[in-house]
Image 1 (tube, rainbow, N blue to C red):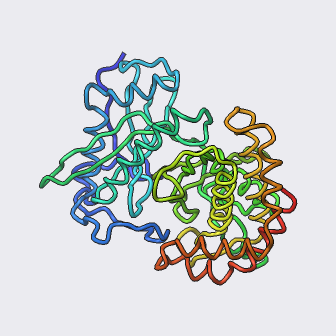
Image 2: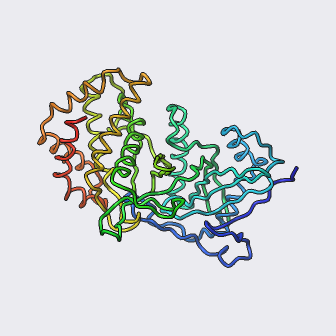
Length: 390
């Protein structure tokens, strides 16, 4: 049996703990990865130090006698009491325009149980963290799948000089890694590169790339509400929103964030009108197919447009997501057949005109827009022909 667990602070990949007498302790947290087209804080606080970050994280962990950690353990059916935990490691993983996530490890004699602690230090980051905690909690209560992380507790703290820091504790997807389009030096072609695989960074074959796009599209479709037009948005591959795990030849994709869940339209509606449902679903599919193709080289470089195999993966994943909804009774069993008839009644030019109207509603100053405009006509044609085989 142990007294209260000892807290230890680390930087990702390092084995030496970071302590208050470390030089880094009083240095400001960097803000990186301003790359996604998702609006970030224009004046991020540079006065929040590593020490502020770790002290606030530690306060959150020990608050109310380690309530958040014990609550998380109870959710995952780990019957572990506080006395069995002798150490809790807080490892700062990376920096972003919104969050600075840490991996939390509760260490017992026989196991190490990981969680994620998402931490925000800027005003807009804290606003996002509140929305995301609520969104993830809502989606986990309304959908029975395991595509997104569970969440276990959220709080805000006032640190030194009344600096506000927000955070929430969530599920850690062990063994999952970011993936991004990268140029393969062996042949100069752009391919999906899985980061930090057990065997190092790994370029995947075209078939596996299609599988990644298929699963990502299936996840987004499963969360789309055909009656209210609600969807998870915004999201972006460049932000690392999707992660993948490879075991032997099998791939498994997860969505690690859900910043917002809102309707395609400005006013939330609920309808059973089939024509309106089909119109909304087509708009969702067009946006899904465009956004699946957007990334940045190596996650932070120039914006890149994925090969048209992503359209194949998108259509397959979309169809599977609709079938999952059918099996769960959310929509009628013949829904996909009727929607296919609706889709195939639209001409190629009609689909292109709809696509132009949809991107006209996007933020025109977003860095993605020149790439989208440049590729939209060809993409619309590729989507049209893929839909014919839905």
